[in-house]
Image (cartoon, rainbow, N blue to C red; front, side, top):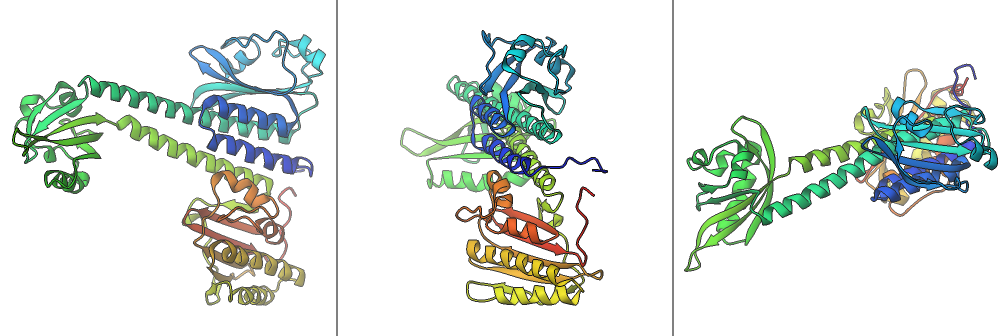
Length: 477
């Protein structure tokens, strides 16, 4: 292979697909750290023929074993913390560099030589789990046979995703702990607490609220709360307070931004209720104000983690299809229609599919494609159109031709799309399909078209097929 790319064998190809699917499923559906890591370790053992897979997380200056899977468990295994820097796992953490070998015997970085010899362990791969230069743990696998270059690359990619998964769950745990602290603070009146008249002018403010906004209580007594509210949130805040004063609701809970005295913006959750006088008439409002900036940051971090997981799926799919399947994150990543476009076609259960086949055939023949290439494109276009009809009930199709003979078929629908955990199976497993999700036929499209661009999500799916006049050389040539 002159370009140095690994040759994914017929044996390893489906295993890598299954590994990506199982690891993705564990990362996206298991919300307890130990459960998620156990699922990842079991996937490594199951799909890479590992004798043992283990995952540690960093706790201060030591690594704590969180997950272990496989038949070869060392005897008298203490399961105790591993100091960072200790030979073996601890050294991988300290140096933040992977250690891989297919010759465990005599390897100075592998201390338990007796166990390895007794169990027949010959290969080892250990990876530091790092997120944005922060060490979060170490993952390792032990094998009874040599690990191929493809298996090593796959395990390294999995290690990167495990690191992101650990960070995501820890962010969630930190968020939950933070919210519990906030609730306890409410009970002891340590959160922001204010009293206002019916015109939303401040009557009282506690120390916590003063600290939150940067104003002293004396300064706040000369202000109203709308003047503290971020301009983009003011209209909604005024509408909610009007409903409260009108008696339409007993209380309101809203998230909005306050602008502090120093100009900084802080996210808060306001819980506001009416205070009634002795006659039962509304006299004032009382509000508990909680700083939720940390939660908002955590939400942004979770969204970023989800984007990284989608990028991982994109890279894996591109790798195992030799670049022929391109997973797009938005409309801007789809290729533009080519120069010469035929009129758009409406696809329904009763019409449009035959017209799509004929349009693809005519375009390919007109562009000078060989008959076998014409047949391939017609099959791919038919599968794309059928997917739209079966899974979304309807769709639209466009066929266009470029100046150099490239033919493009674009099919879009408004169905349920493919969820992140189903992407590897839906795009690569023949015949895979779940209710309301694309999947059936994608494998066939990959086998018959030169390139397949896929944009999918809850709002629908767009498939763009492209075929050159001449069959491209394989990516490994």
